[in-house]
Image 1 (spheres, one colour):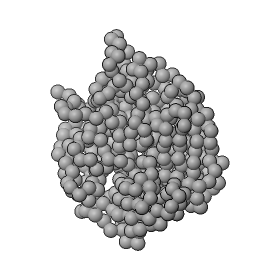
Image 2: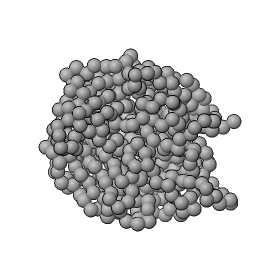
Image 3: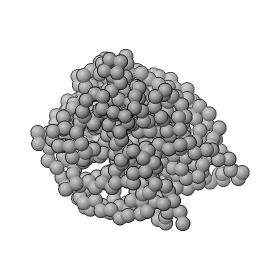
Image 4: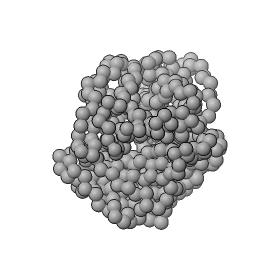
Length: 455
């Protein structure tokens, strides 16, 4: 019996995953065409060429009809069933699957040296008219860029809006992204700031997928790289999951894009319940500005999640790293997410050396019941019942193996999740956090494409 196909309501939300496995060869296209009644959704997975890093794109579907193709060649598709891993594709990929079966895709990067040093992961993203990135690094030591992909056949015009410590400031606007293409927008021309900023990526004439890739340097020596996940649109109630255990930077980033000052109440969720954050319980964020709060001492190396209640809509994220000397530390990021869908899947293949935990955060007033089905493959995954007390987090350790698959099913409507992974890559103490959410929670609902067009 296929444990991934269970009775009950199934939401076709897109989940995220990180895989680090060898290339699973393409399978021949089906001889029977898809019927007109079948609908298909697509996400974009970032990828690039690197002389020192291993880049892997992984996709997992609980049903049939999983497809991969490059963004530029949408009709040249490869069909797969279940799990597909593409090693070093060199360019961003589009991944699609048939509704209503849950499916998800992610990109991972691992490197001991070079500009992409460290462990990093990105959730593959559905096209939307708007994406928010809180925690963008434009310091003098940073090299950051926005990668925009257009899956439609017609061009899109993209505007960037930036919010920093002194307010809103100039950013590229009117960037043309041709149909079925990818455009990389360097942030190197923005005014250098000492702290993080928030970038809003918007398109008025089409949907695009967007990603932020950040690299930091000490002169010519790389200090690490990672993707910054898109956060939720500005809101007055936010939850930031995936704060890892251990030493290192724990910097909360808040941005108020509105015209009135926002007062933000900050709380924490721990394994034993709500956590008080002495000295950081309330933060004032002036209009159209970004503020940071250092929580490294307050969190005391404990894992957890943050809860935020604001008087005006704000965005939120966190800068993280593994601490220690520059030769060993690795940056990572986590952001505010919306609740998990009722049924979603993820897959990881970070290698046998990686340690991963599934962190579930419950900011609600009632206990959350969750079915977590985990294993090293979809065929050997076994379900377990997990209870997440109100105001708490629970961490579920995944098997230390070359690959992992995770399915989360819950009736709770306020549960958040993240996958937190660590690994030793030479001298580097690698860290990566994947915030788990259905794709529509990062913006507009995913577009539905013609299943015969290869999208």
